[in-house]
Image (cartoon, rainbow, N blue to C red; front, side, top):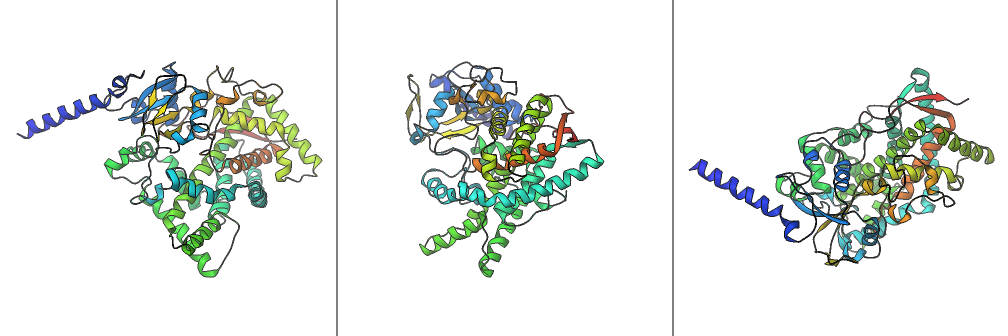
Length: 491
């Protein structure tokens, strides 16, 4: 009887999956043939590829404007047309105002951050947090950025004395984390000098531990929320939740009890808690922690990647590096060595280099949107139904020669307005429209400061091939084995 029941269950499960995997055939949309039970993500499930590379490979398997795919057992539409993707994010935002990623405010409060929140809750929080990232606030943060930058150069000098080949990704990660600790968490970390600083080791735990459970967590957060719903897993590991909650609880309690005020992100959240309380509303510690943690992960990873991938590309393109160093030297000479917000803004070639790095290595290689009301695709009979997940393959689009000629070539000049050599409507490394990355200006500024400081003192030479091999089972584009380079003092 047990064997019969088990066999019957297996048959029912198989037929159920067959029905799920016929969704796009039944709806008449061209689609990629799925594999039971992986959908179109077998390589991701087997931990052979990262999220971005797996989705990019799906992009390369079709030439359709829209193609149906299966994110494990979740039907989704891959938007291969960058102009339609931009329209979805900007002009027709009202049809796609949510990301459709995992968000469970009641049972997993740290998942309910600005990135994930839907509808009006996202809109309310976005408007409250926006003042943190104005140009005025960025100017106020410059002393912090430069103080941490000085520590970076001091540590670099010691390491260059001992070694000729350094993992530049590791070094830049420490710099960015010390910035994030000060600006967002309100305390001074020592990641640059101390390899065992909890702020550093905790992030490495998030990004470095590849396991079956963490793979389910990542896939559940970004592409198939049902995985977390049915397994009962939280979006973060219990150890990580404990670390973040203790840190934020201490910071908020300590400041509120002692009436301490600082110009940082934690202070903004404290002010928002007071404002909510005065209106009879409640903003919990968990809600604060969720958003601080978002910037811990997203901010640290994006700036680290931008600095280190830029230096990697420059090490393989010495002419580009020399041209950028010349601009840096001239700016420093012109302003008596002073680095200010305005001085960085005037550096045109640095801006072009950062833009080109973000093209080849976008912070998130895919963008998510969920259809919130039925949407007829322009110039088409296709109707995207309410509740359908759409995926915008940033990496695939940015490496398509149709929009970016000779995409493997690192060419900052392609973004020069006088010699423009790309499709501007296919370039949005931080997303675009109302739901673009709120911290993009800060992330870019921190990246530029890191690049500027390091290139003002050192030359970087390659020690690995130009083509980067990405680590498997990660959401961002993380290089396997870091980014080692030969580092030499400049004459």
